[in-house]
Length: 443
Image (cartoon, rainbow, N blue to C red; front, side):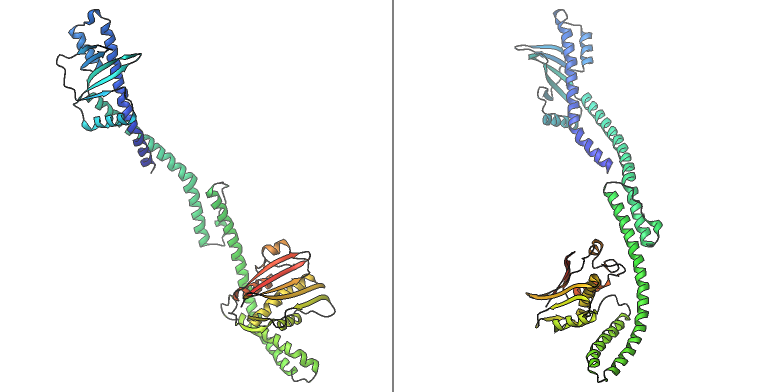
């Protein structure tokens, strides 16, 4: 490509240069003729011998030389039999386009023409010189010049191409090869740290690509390592869920026996206990399903939201003696279209996080209102707020925990269930005055 581009540039340069080469050639011819004219004018009676006349014509390379004055025309040198003139050119007109046209016409017509050149004489505005020459030597000189330009252009373009190739190979091909080799090695063995790319520190686009690839490989290795831990954790959870389901089955049998006790206090507690055990057994059963990577599709139904919030209050373990005040501000007749069990888990996770954040005293307010075809539910607490790291990875498991030792699974599970319902959860506000989460749920 460099060869082609340089040769193309040389062609564009060659077109005007060959025209000006022809012009300079003709100007030199007229200058030699002018010198011969001056030498003849200095001789007695402007006469020279036949031998000297032929010598002068040969040295000038002309057939005849005529000096034009203001009102005179003087034949200075001439052959015995002047030839017929094929073309005439006036060197006073040095416009680029005519010069280019005349040069290529000379090359296309070929040798054999006799041309007349009319050139003004410097410092003599009323005088001019007329020189008749053969065009064949001019065409030969033009071809020699063209071949010299061609070979010089070929050498320059070859050297340029070699330098460009070596430069591109050093600055671009080698770094891109390092990038591609690192990608291939990372694909084959992502866990192998030795295949990682060390950025060269360049500031251009290739340097940016190197740094971004190194960051991506580091993060992917960390993600793969975390994935391995999650796989091991998932295996352990599966085993625990299997054994826990058996334990809960025994608890269910005991609960059934308790339901036959006539004590009013027992009769009041047993339904809640049985509901909790049923939910735990169902959760363990779903966990044991092979390849389970997400929650099951929500089974939507219309239900009252206020009683569900009261159930959540009981499940988070609030007692009358502690300093946390629970305020259920849900309108009495507000209906929600959602999976009741999944929404119970959403509220339970959010409210449990709020209770743990406030420790022993504070307030939890739960509001809900209709906004067009959507329901807005806000969980407000008066805790100390979320720290910067928790806000940065808010809904990421094992990264977005708001307290030391937490897993961050509560918010992650809540968001996953809300998204499955077609809704969204956002952190409206957090700070020293408390935290507000907003759930927006469509009908």
